[in-house]
Length: 273
Image 1 (tube, one colour):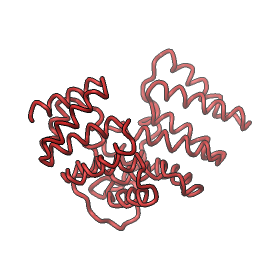
Image 2 (tube, rainbow, N blue to C red):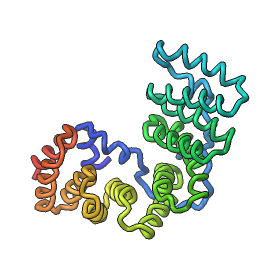
Image 3 (cartoon, helix red, strand yellow):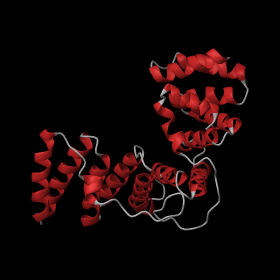
Image 4 (cartoon, rainbow, N blue to C red):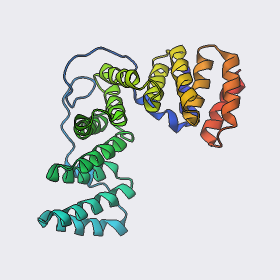
C-alpha cells in the first residue's frame, strides 16, 4: 500500500474507498468473464438465505414476510409488480441493497421490461460498491454486468451504463477490459465526468500521479463542481512533486467544501508542504 493510501485510510476518507478495492497490478487477460475470485476459482452464487435473509428491523420483518407469501402465489402482472417492488423498496430503505436488487431482478426476469432490467442492474451496482468480501464483490459485479449489459445492448449510447460496467471489470480478474471501456467512453465523449474521474483514480492507484493529475485537470476544467476530483487533483500534484500546484489547489478546495473528511485530508497534506 502506498504512503498516500495509508494516509487516506487513517483519515477514514470514504471517498477513496473505491481506490483500495482496485487491483494493484493491471494485467492483460483475453479470457471471457466468469464469476471467479482472483485466484481463478469459480464462485458459486450465494444462497438465498446467505444473501437475502439478513436481519431486518422487527417493524419491517413481519411485513416483508407477509408480502413474500403473497408474491409466491400471485399470477396477476400488475399485482406481482406492486408486491415485488414493495419488498425491494423495504430492503433498500433498510440498507439491504443486494436483497433489494434480487427482487427488482425477479421483475426483470419475469417481464423483460427494460425499466425493471435497468433498476435491477443499478441496484446490483449500488450493492457492489458496498461489498465487503471478494466473493460477494465478484458475484455482485457479475450480476451488474448481466442486467446493465442488456440495457447497453439495447441502447449503446448509454455511456453512464457503460461506465458502471467498466468499473466492475476494473476490480475483477480482467481489469484491462474495464480500462478499455473507459478509454472508449473518453474517445466518444472526452469530457465525460465519470470516465475522467475513474481513470484519474485508477492512475492514482497504480502510482501514475502525473497521469492522474492530467485526468483530474480535464475533469475539473469541465466539471468544476466535482469536489472529489478537485481534492484528488491536489493530492496528485503533491504525489507527483508539484508542490506549489498542490498547495494552491488544496487551499482552493478548502473554500469549496465543508465536508470534514475532505478538510481533514487537505489539512494533512498542507501540513506536509
